[in-house]
Structures are given as C-alpha cells and as structure tokens.
Length: 458
Image 1 (tube, rainbow, N blue to C red):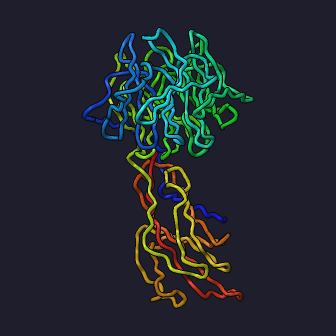
Image 2: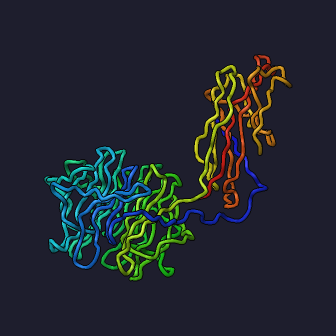
Image 3: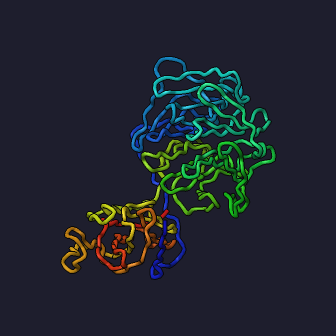
C-alpha cells in the first residue's frame, strides 16, 4: 500500500519537553500507610494486596481503586494469605485471577514460597506439584499471548536467582531459555502490548544495583542495549522502584526506587529503544510503591511506598495533551464503493500519523486534501464529474498526490514534528478519488468523509 508523508516545516521548533505529570488525588478512604505492596490491574481496577505498615508486621488486606475511590474488598470469611510484602503478583486476565507468590512475612519468620489466587470474591491457596523456590523480590507479569504468568528472579537468605517460571493456573513450570539475565531481585516486569515483550530493568544482586535492560519474548531473553539508563547521582542502576507499561503513550514508566541508600523520586520512560528521564513534579521520593497502569482509565496510579515513614498518598500520572483523530461528515460512493477514511494510529508529536481510505476503484488515483479549517462545499456545483453528495470537507490549503491505490486503499500520512508547542494543534484531511476511463480520461470525482487530527504530546 503506497504511503505519502508530508512535514510541517513551519511548525518545527525546540525539542519536545516532558508533558506527562503527576496529579495528587484525594479519595475519601484509602489503605493505611504501607510499602512493598505490588500494584496490578485487571484493565478496570488497580489491585493492591497487603504490604508493610511498619517494622515487624505485614498486612493481608485487599484494596481496589477505580480512579476515584479506594475500596477494601478483603473477604470477611474464608482463607486469607498470610500478611506479606515484596511478593510477586500479576493479574491473569484470561482467567480473571489475581495471582500471588512468595514474599516476606515477619509473623511466619521469613520468606514464603506459597501460591494464592483471588477471584474477586475469595482467596484460594494453590497446591502445585512444583514451584519456584521460597523467596521475595521476584518479578511477575501476565503474558496474554501465551496465557501464562511469568516469574523471574528473587532472593532468599542472601541467595539471588535468575530462574524463569510460568504459571498456568494449575502448575508452575521452570523454563529453559537459551539466554537469561544474571542473578538478581527487586526489579519489575512490565508487559508491552505493542510488541508482546516483557521488559525488566536493573534490580540488584549481591554487589548492588544493576542497570541493564532485558526483554522476554515468550520463550527467550534478549539484552536491550540502551544509550541511557535510570541513574542516581549520575550513576546508572536502580532497584525497589515501581514500573508499568502505559498503553496509550506506548512507554514503560519507571518511578522512584533507590541505588545506594537514599530514596528517589524521578521518572524514567523506555520507548522500546532507549530510556529518557522526564521532568516531573509530584510525589516525594520512595521505594516499594503500588504502581500500575489501568487500561480502561488510560492512566498510571501510584499509592504509598516507603519514604522514611510509610506513605498513603494516591497519585495519577498521564499527559493532559492527548491526541485524537475524529471523523466528521460523510463520504460519497465512487466506482469501488463508499469512500471511508479512518485513522490508523494516534497523532503523537514525533510520530507519523496515518489514515487509510477505501474502497477506491481499480482505475482511480487519489489525492490527500489537507486544511486548517473544516468546510462544506458541494463539489457538484462547480465540477460536473462530481455527483451530488460529494463534498469538499477540508479547506484545501495543501493538496498532495497522486496516490495510487493498492487493494482498493490509499494512505495519507503526516510526519508530526517533535515539538511540544504542537499540543492541541489540529488539521483536517479527506481523500479525493479521481476516476479515469480506459482511455485515460478523467470521468469522475468522489470524496471521503473528513478526519480531524489533533496532536498529542507524550
């Protein structure tokens, strides 16, 4: 399918600056102060289990957050997991289960190796034949393609591990990838819905903080070599942070943690190629926060953590400058059928935005009609080859073409400059189809619906 890219040189300017930021929320009720409670989401809610409110004690309550209110959904009857912190957790969306493994329990005198599942109503302790070794600080995430939860690493009594396991709801299976990160713990997984990879950054081993990035593709690990990495005082490496994948912005977001003692409050984002530090304001420095993206709410949420004392504040993280591509007006029917223009992706600054039009005739060409304004001009009034109902919907400040259809479709593209000043800037576009007969004579003019694209800034 041919594609046509245009740029807007008159809009080029300073490099993009950070837009996403934290906003503190004020829910009426919330969990008590705590740290080491892993946050996961089912796509609609943020789940947070247990955690450590202070020295020598861990909790076993379950809370959910809907973007506005926290609700304690701890079952009043039935079995409950022992209180713990620094466990592994993931949400199995295929089976609608919160999956919990291991962690640390002061009441039970050390680290744990048990597996539990929560179905939203009751907890069930699972009894697999085999399972990962007892430990804390493992990383877990759900792989929706394979339909299993993946666990990596962990630590017990000073022994760090680099085993990779999968959980299918019944059995743990130790995997044997050809490559693997070195032994480590206190890092986090985040599943990338665009690539299907899980990303793991840093963590720590017996020597201290690590600074490498790894990707798990469902069967093997691969090292991702980056030019930059999260640092502290200019030295790369991080553990005990929060990390999640922001589907809307296509970024893995890392917050806080520590490298050499002091807690941190910076934000780093990984775009699949490199890490970038963002300039943000908001939460105080901390380790071990509840931190997860909620797909249905299109925001990342942070709760609590350890920042000297345990904390109990709630924050959301997202850009206020979201992109949009909204259809307007109606297309008319050409030789191939009704002309319909639809957006293929979100128009973010720094990306190439595409819109595809179909269905065009076999002997047609197409033009991209771009404008700063929406208009409604009946073409039949000025051009006899345009049927009644075919309208010019964009002000035709720029006409680009010809586009040669492939498979009855043609695509227009806009290379959006990487400029924060473009936030909220809109353009309007439609496709005009030019029909020719076998002798090469122009015999028809037809138009698609319009599309208003508004630039968002990550």
